[in-house]
Structure formats: structure tokens, C-alpha cells
Amino acid sequence: MHIRIENLSKQYEEHHVKALNELNLSFEKGEFVAIMGPSGCGKSTLLNIIAGIDRQSSGRIFIGEHELSAMSENALTEMRRDNIGFIFQFFNLLSTLTVYENVALPLELAAKCGAAEIKKRAMEMLEKVSLAARHDFYPSQLSGGEMQRVAIARALVNNPQLIVADEPTGNLDTENGEQVLELFRKLCREGMHTAIMATHSQEAANCADRIVRMKDGRILESSIK
Image (cartoon, helix red, strand yellow):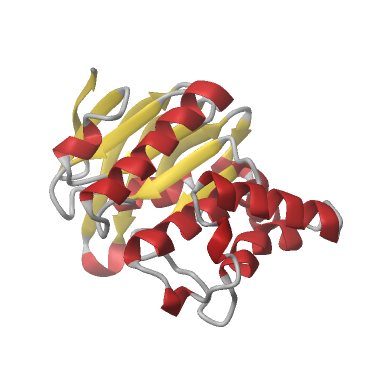
């Protein structure tokens, strides 16, 4: 999915902070991009706007043929549900649901397939992240790396065209972090998904096709590796 950003700005009036300052940027279908920069540079704000979680103050953002700022809240909710998988640094799993139930939830909310298809797709996604054997565990019974992989399975179970990940390896050890990054690479190569990842880790960023560096709400450089 192609993403185009034009003169994008975000200002938090109550704090007199300009988090993003007239950004112009694009992401190609099948591309894996890492966004780097110090804390407070605007990485997470940019991801939240790309994912339709937050709204910009000015400028435009296009996801495929859709201009997000022109969409109603209901249309934006459907766009996120059907086309965007967001992976949070701190997992955001529902503690009262099992691993399987957490992963199946987006399919149930979409209400586009029956129970048998939901089970099939959720278990296939858990197989991809090597957690099918723990489908009946609860989040409290998992390690940090396992919880992140569950969060990734949940984000990807609807086969979103756009994957947005905020520090997805920040709480993982080296081995689990490498597994997560390899999964992103594989999805972009084989499924022509677009993946955008914010990270502080140069090692993680080196796994991407392109690195975008930010500072003070601006783009410093965008370099293809």
C-alpha cells in the first residue's frame, strides 16, 4: 500500500508544542522503513497519524487512494480495522483473554467470516509466530517476547496492507527481536505489505530497506540502505 504525506504538521496547543513540522514523505508498497530519532522527535506522533489513531493539525496524508483527513470517524475505524495493523511497544493484550482469543478478536470484530474460518486464520497466524502450542495460555503466563509475538499475530491476522510498529523490539531480547524483524521482512517481500517501524535501535533499523531520521518534528534525511 502506497502512503503519501504532504506538508504534515501536528501541534498540541495546550502544551504549545509542534510535534511535527511540515513533513513530506512517501512509503512504497512492499517497502520496510525504519524511522529513527531521539525521544520527543515526533516518531510516535507520526505513526499514530499514519495509522489513523490521531489527526494532524494541517497537511494531508493518503493511504492508497484514501485521504485520511477527509474520512469520517466511522470510515477511519473501518480503514484501521481492514487495512492497518498497529503493533505497540507494550503489547496491549487483553489479560482476561487467552492467546487465541486475543488474536481472533480483530476477526470477530470485523464479522466477515464464520467461526471455523476465524479459528483457522487465528491458528495459522499463531503458527507463523511459533505460538500455536500456547494458544490456550493467558498473557500473564507468557514471556515478554511471547507477548510481543502474540501482539504481532493479532495485528496481522486481518492481513493488513499496512503494518505500523512503534518500538516493536524495544522490550525484547536479541533473539526474539531478530525473529520479529525477520517476520516484517518476509511479509514485505512476499506479501507486498508496507511496514513502517519507529525504533531507537540502529541494529533494528539496519534490517529495513530505508531509514528515515527525524529531529524536532522534521525529517533530517531519508536514505535507502
